[in-house]
Image 1 (cartoon, rainbow, N blue to C red):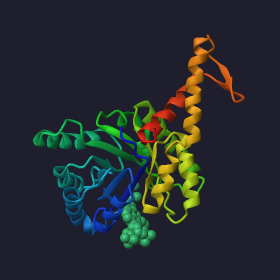
Image 2 (image 1 turned 180 degrees about the vertical axis):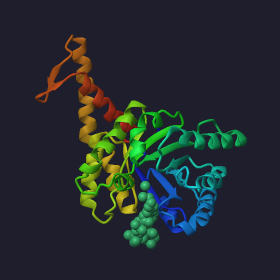
Image 3 (image 1 turned 120 degrees about the horizontal axis):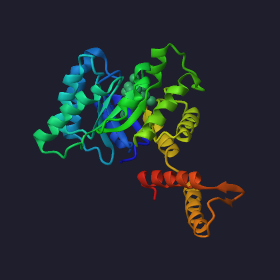
Length: 289
Ligand code: COA
Ligand code: MG
């Protein structure tokens, strides 16, 4: 699966921001028809995204379109407007049930069949950002067209009546539930937006925290956030080097009949090896090794 270390949103009605996004070499570009687009600009955003998909070359960046939530009344037209131009994936916000995904998946499948595109090639990513979404994660995460679970902290806090804070304790259970369900179903987990887009120091801290929690990437809303976030979600040279040493020494010790041994003053056994493998997998997915 392609690494989605940073997933950059922009309002779908903003041609300049779509072009700007293409120029910053971000893993994923998500053109938004939902909350980033004003109510009276939904039609314009649909046409604008369709035009971008047709006319612009996105380079190595992934092309995603975020539709309005299922039940909003906009979702059918949103999906119909972008599907003919073959986005790489569809992002569904405020997901609460498996049949929300199935509805979108059926429409996507019809487009794949009609155009002769490979089945399941257009992926779905869902934003879990309500209390119902969190308690239904087990069924939501099981859909076969799904690539990623995305955590939406602002909507979630609004939904449960929490006040957002820098430490983010108020969303910790939900954030952690998203990572855990993603891991259980072999999906990517994409962390919350850091909305103070001029504060790069605290962005780095929050991105590092998300990576340490097990997230594979983070949503972003400004070009200045691309580099710090992609860096936080790419294993650094020291981490890669250490993971390789763990792997090598582990094999040698196993051959000698030792399941646990010491490396740099620390105990190494199977879970440490598994973690080292994850680091190498992520470095590989990010194109670093
Ligand atoms: N994607 C692409 N380009 C963006 C961008 C984004 N999300 N946010 C800002 N830019 C561009 C600006 O257009 C500007 O380009 P220019 O130099 O060619 O004029 C440049 O980056 C600098 O932008 P800046 O002036 O610092 O910010 P702004 O005041 O133009 O925009 C926001 C601030 C918050 C309105 C803007 O970042 C934004 O729209 N973010 C995304 C919002 C969104 O999609 N929300 C829904 C999902 S959570
Ligand atoms: Mg939201």
